[in-house]
Image (tube, rainbow over the protein chains, first blue to last red):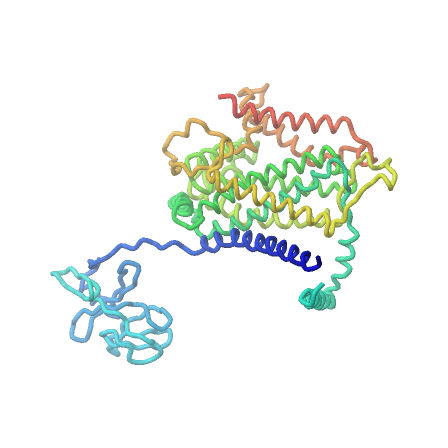
Length: 150
Length: 374
């Protein structure tokens, strides 16, 4: 009989314990799902028409301006030979915003002294990966940027 | 007990001893274990304060969750609530729980208050427990009023206009009060900012302090015994231990309330009948008010009573007189423990029992009329 009793007790513990776990699950699962933000719809861009001209970029002290490509921040800058280049402006190290250093001829991240060449390659400092490149097209005064592979 | 249980209870004992070494909780546990709760035919009413407390906890948790997506402002409030109920996982559930538990909490608070009143449990030495409870009730109503505006829909816009307009008719300070409440002369985005601040920061802060006082008073003094027990012999009185017997029952009641709440929120996420909160259409200050404009059910009796008053009574404006009567009535109600001299001597006061019946009947009848009269 003793073993019978332990089984019954075990069964009750299982039902009660399972009930408690299921209840906690029913409370915390929706809470957990709720605090995870739903994906924000992002406009699919094939190319972006910038709201400024080459003259605006030239007028900047750093010879560069920032733009939003969908949700991504990009930087467009004047290279040495008066060519326009555009890169992702988010440093691949810890996501600071990079800036143009015309005096050094590189793209520079001030946060941890990360350095990139004008084609986006990480050449010095902590950045682990290169910055991705945008394609730049100029039609008259208007500048278009697009992603290389699109 | 088998070996595993022994190890477990050994661990629990060690942790307990560790804490007791530092904080001397033994005295507290000793105190708790001597606390008793009277058992009699009205014992069920002892649970309503606890139910209100539980629902308040639900309010805090669901409120914090809503805060993660809610954005106050005329251009964002309505949109963010719509985002919560349509895009966010279980957003509809969190909002439904917040609304349902708000309404159930007010209901539980009313039951709690009237049961305390009719059993004269407010009598000496519990005067301050009653007063702190009344202040908590006032805050809870203000919570309801301020939260109502936050979705920034048509109904909430006009309800807030009427509600703040009422504050505006108070003599001398009325105009100033109205501008402070609205953050300007009209109900605008600025009003949302103020009500939001009140609802999520100022009111919770004050409420927490008062609630702590209320609970400490109750823990210190224990549950009130019925007046009739004064003439009973010790062998005729029955008690149960607060810890663990009453606490376990309290937790069981909480579990039942949680289940009722969950069923209501899942089956009727937008509320049902007279208690409903569909998001509806966005507030438009230039649009006419909806055909039926009503306050929440717990303000209905006051709303209806004010409607019955003529524009002028003698030289005073009807609304002003009505508001005055409600204010004075509320103050008298809050001071009942000090006015009812008989109960503090252990006798039931016929006058105050009749007064309570009148107030209860007034609230029920006016609420009822508010919903059936066009």
